[in-house]
Amino acid sequence: MKTNTALCEILLKTSHLLAMVLKGNSVNILTLQTQKINNENEKQVITDLLFNTLRDYYFGDYILSQLVPNLQNLYSNKNLQIRALLVLTLSALKNDNKYNNKEFVVVNECIKAVKKLNYKMAGFCNAILRNFLRQQNKFLSLKNSNKFNHNLNYNLQQANESQLQLQSQLQLQFKYSHPFWWIEKLQQQFKNNNDVLQILDAGNSPPPMNLRINLLQTNKEKYSLLLKKFCENLVENLQNTNLRTNFDTIFDANFATNLDNDYSIYVKKPIAKSNIPNYNNGDVSIQDFAAQLANEYLFNNIQNNAEVMQKFANKNEIFVLDACAAPGNKTAHLIEKFIKIFPNKKLNLIACELDKNRCESINKNLQRLNLTTQNYPLLNVKILHQDCQNFHENYHNFFDIILADVPCSASGVVRRNPDIKWLRKADDIAKFAKQQQQIIQSLWKLLNNNYGVFFYATCSVFAEENTLQIQKFLDNYKDEASLKFQKLLLPTNTHDGFFYSCLLKNK
Image (cartoon, rainbow, N blue to C red; front, side, top):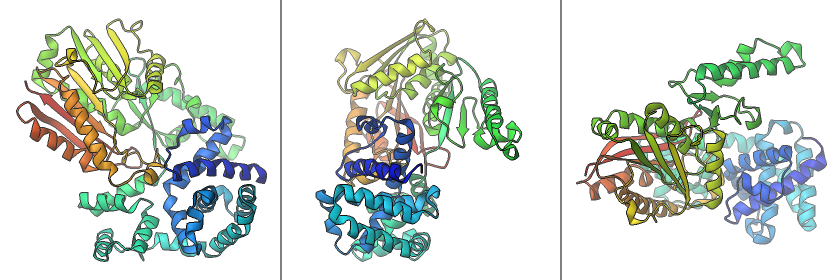
């Protein structure tokens, strides 16, 4: 916290963004740029405050429901930003250690911000926040206690038997920081209560950071030396000599390289992109570990299938479609894997993306990683701005491999996009499932009849978008499709939640 005035302005700018979410709009890093928040330090503070608040939004929402006599007054569009200010302040008081012992300063800065929006509401908001300060230990202990539910199964059962009373729903949302329908859906799907709690806990935590090494340029051993040099510089820059320890100790505290593969590094303490060694030179990409496994699973299935490998052996060039390609991390990894495994085969890859602006991100990614025809003459990449369902019939039975990372609820990566918990509605899942079904059926026509490989991916944990989706497709295409691989990765503290399925087109 630089100055009190700065905090007031930060609260005002962040409350504007939170109010956008409350109105039903998605907010991300690009939104900050459109709001002319260009100072990097300010952007980081605003992003942290906004995302932390959204991850635990139901904490503030529940407290307001307990402290405010007339909650509807705060839910009106007229006072929406003031409601956002209050929730942000409650989140800052609960989550941000830098405000320890400065609670009344934070409250005062919030009230300054309220006065700029509606002077008449200042006294009302001041009373709410000071009432919270008097009772915060009660609310925090209540959230961490078992008073709401000794067991999640029991509580949901009780809630159903009592016709899902509003207060019961509010309490569940307060405790688990997810919409009630989301909690209920997870409970219905997963029989193991620990799986439900793991998913909910992950959705409320800051996202992990992982690096993927570009094995066409370097390897884990060489790149680890660069990271150790980076840590050595950190040690040398520490002014307090008592903190200057062996840089290997600093390295182990910041990075984990002993993962069961040769291309991934877990960053225990996330660092700025600008500080990542040789990032701009293409040695590494920032990509979640579970997302990195997409192409690992894809090529494992290819290499372990005799019919597919025999087909590839008889072809000089392979045709691949990345159907929903932006921002291009999976596209790049696919190219890296293909060139390593099939160095003498020509790769013709079409990366398709509906969003024109995101098409440019694919191109920039490939350029940064030096994945160009100039560097690899057998590589031919075409980036198409179009709907993957609108390919001309000339492309029917054309592609040897199709990678379809389809639009979904993003329930497995909600901590990276915490506004999702507020924006998603229960009936959205069925809408996503219908869209996914249409995409699969459209893309299936484009897949080569002669052992074409179809790889389906979502960043969702909901069965309607995953196992049930694939089962429905197999039931309809049982004469020409066979399931070769399927896996659901639940989110953990080191990776996000993803679902993968590999299908083979038999004829």
